[in-house]
Length: 360
Image (tube, rainbow, N blue to C red; front, side, top):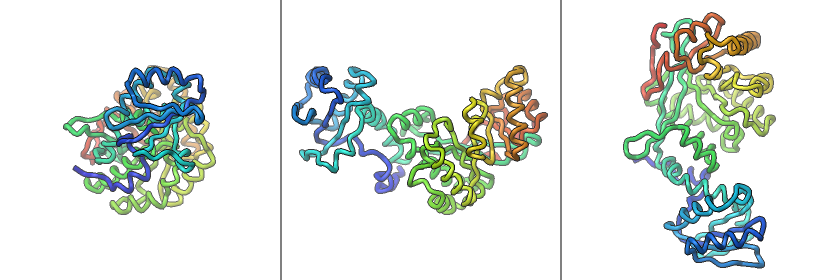
C-alpha cells in the first residue's frame, strides 16, 4: 500500500484525534456547563470541572474520544457546537499559552472525528484519477482536453463517491489537503497514462489562496511528472464561496504568468458567477449542466445560454458545455457556436483517457 510522506501530510492535516490524554472544553456560556456535565456523566467519562478557568477536562483514549464527541453532537445545539472551544492535549501535559491558539470549535472536532476514514484514505494515498474527455463541439472525434476527476478507494475494492469525500473534507477543514493531493495524483496519473491533451483540474477558492498552493510549487510538481503548465487548466469550482476576491485574483494572475489557464465552472447557475467574469477574467467558461439539460425544449434556459455564449464570444473566452446527455442538446449548442462539449453522450469518466471521441 502506498503511503504519503508523513512530514508533508502533517504540515497540512489536523493532528489525528487519537492517543491518551485530556480533552479540554470551554463553553462560551458557563450556564451550559450543567448540560455538558450531564452528558459526561451519561458517558461515564472521567472528568474534572475547573471553575476558575471556566473549563472542563476529560480523560480520553482512542476508544472513547470519538464516541464522546458523537454524544455531544446529538446533545448540543448548533450554536453550542460553534461556540464551545475544545483542545486535545496528549499525555498529562496541561495547555500553555502557546497551545491556546490550537483550540477549535466543538463542531470542528466532531467533524474531524467523523472524518477519520478520510484522513486514513489521504495518508494511505487511496486516491485515483478518472478522466472525462472534453471534445471539439463541431468534430466530437477530436479530444481537446480531459477533466481529471478524483476517485477514492475504500481499501476493500470499492469506490467512495467524490461528493462523500468533499462533504467530509469541507466539514473537517480538509478541502485544501484533498484538493492538493488529488491534483498531485492527477499529474501522476497523466504521466502514467502518457496523456498528451490539456488537463482540467478542479480547485476550490480556499485552496487557490492557500499559502502552500503557489504557482511555483504547482509548476515544479507538474513538470516533475512531464506535464507543462501550458497544458493545465485550473477549473475554479464553488466560485460563489470566494471570500477574498483581491487575493484570489492576485493568485490566479500568478498562475497565468506561470503558463496555467483558468476556467470558471458552472456558469449560468446563478447571477453571482456571471458577475465574476469581469473580476476573474477566465480563459474558459463551463456552462452549468443544469442549464444544458433539455435546453432545446426550454425557452428560458435557451435565452440565458445564448447570452452567455454571445458574451463569451465577444470577450474571446472559450466555452465548454457540460453534462451533455442527448444529441439534441449537443446540436443546440453547436448551432450557437459553443467551443467544446463534455458529458455522458460523449463518454463517461474512466481510468484510461479516451484518445478519440465518438462521431456525433
